[in-house]
Image (tube, rainbow, N blue to C red; front, side):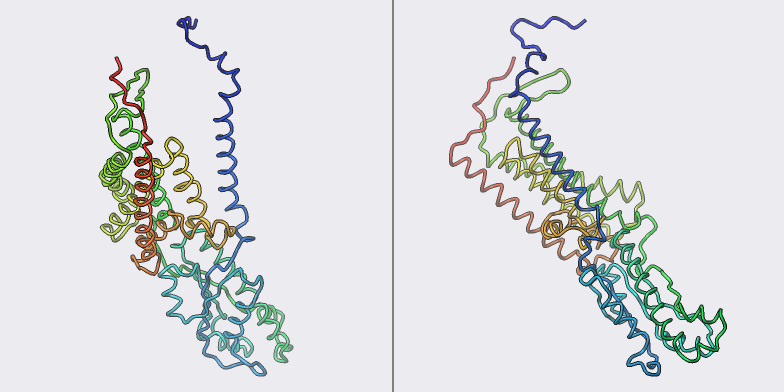
Length: 426
């Protein structure tokens, strides 16, 4: 049996009948739920339909002469047909040499490559003369370091293009007079003469989560800095007497320490910077030492990770200082809700609606995941995303400081005090 309500205290049943008690949480919960649903599902439901300029390399290394009556070698014909194939604008084909394709795969600039070998025309001609030693082949190269979905999409596109090229060449061969005397088996081979082989163009380690370890490491870093920033925010407010402290049934209010908003922000940012040294180290120890993910350039990875966490943590403090109790919700949208679907780490930005590509230009998780991926998979190359990551971290760091201190100094000058000093509670 429930204990009797002390005199003067309201009962929950009475308060539940007050409409104004429901309005604010209901509206906020409904809006947040609706927006999150639209954001997360809107970015992943139709990658192929949203495909826009996915970078893929095509290599024509064929050194053979053109067939009789043809203006170019078969390799050149394949490359031309691949680049001009519909839908226009879905793929950004990079016609490059073999060495350039390997370099672009090794820097994450392309999601895959289609390679026509040097002996392609010669091996096709050998089929028509009955002197074939091996079947003509086109190689599809994957790039798992850019993400399993993006690499898989590029591989499927390349395999389809290679198969269509094989059928087009088959029409030329079966229409030639020499094909009339061939047997049924030979004519079947001539109709679809090219073997399509798929292999990894730029290998990554076995313990890389099929190219997803960089994304999840970035997510851990962002979440840890977001949580750290908010814990410091609430902890400092409680310690300084600007918020109640409640643990289980115990409630307390400390004496209010007279301090301005600007100095409070300095305190919170300094504590965030210090604690993030510990949390960043623990994330990397857990992932690399305890779980054994494949990682190289570990000192650089730690430095980049800490600076990334610092930019996020200071951003959280700046937003909390500007928006007060709503700051945690605002920073959640800035650093997580909007950042995850626009990160390009699971679904390529080239395969999401244009709104997410716009967000990806400045949302922090996109920049941080590109830098972490460059360190983990692409030998810490600057052109693989690391340089951009450092630049965007610097911009984020400066923006957090400028925005946070502009807002707190404005509040201080206007005399907006946070609380009237409270006496020690009994």
